[in-house]
Amino acid sequence: MSTATITVDHRSTPGGLRGSMAAEWTKLWSVRSSWLNVIGAIALTGLLGLQLGFSAAYERENPGPGQVVEPAAVGEMAIGALMIVQVVIAAFAMVPVTSEYATGSIRSTLQWTPVRRDVLLGKTLVLAPVLFVYGALLGLVAAIGAGLAAGQWADWTASELVTDLAKIGAYSLLAGLFTAGIAFVIRNTAGTLTVAFLLLLVVPLMLGQSSIRALQWLAGLLPGGAGEAFLSGSTDLMAPTLSFAVLVAWAIGGLALGLRILQRHDA
Image (cartoon, rainbow, N blue to C red):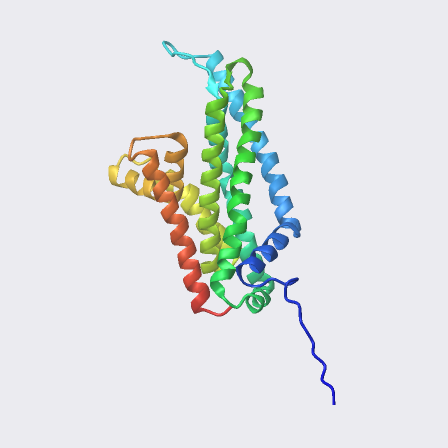
């Protein structure tokens, strides 16, 4: 009697973290929502840049008594636009998580990648560079729009613009990863977007306008407040490097909490 030996080649279907990253990259760019988010964000950022540029030009052409008129840095105007558009970036970061829970495809994801740490790491490692480039791209669009609208009042200093774009990319990366982390905790689109909207924009803005110093500190310790201080270079509450550290802590904390929930609860 002869026996047949069947050899299965696993090289074409990598598993673990490598396979998770490959799958996440494919899923991220194969759905319309990702592309619609990018197109909408570019359009919105461009319009905001134009508005900020026109406003900067008007203020400099109509200065107040004794006001010293200086050109407006296009990078700073781009930062102003990003603080509004950041919620759209957060939505981009949460969709790879919340869409899987909404459709039930998270069960298939966990079956193909049974080590749940690899599921979260796969999404994180794919999202991180994409978010950095996404934020920097939106910053560049805003800077170009603002600079064209401001005309002669625009300051196009290249070194300052590159620095501002790098800071915008870093903030977009960390704010996006924080949002992705809480998406694993909340597991639905509306809830995740609400929390991100509150912590990145609304609550820091409200507390930061308070005359009470303790509330200003609380705003600075929230991800949105820390991000604004880091991007603007403000030293009112803490050094920009400390604000950046606060941002890193929020991103790591959000992902760690998301991983804990993912490991303890079924899909």
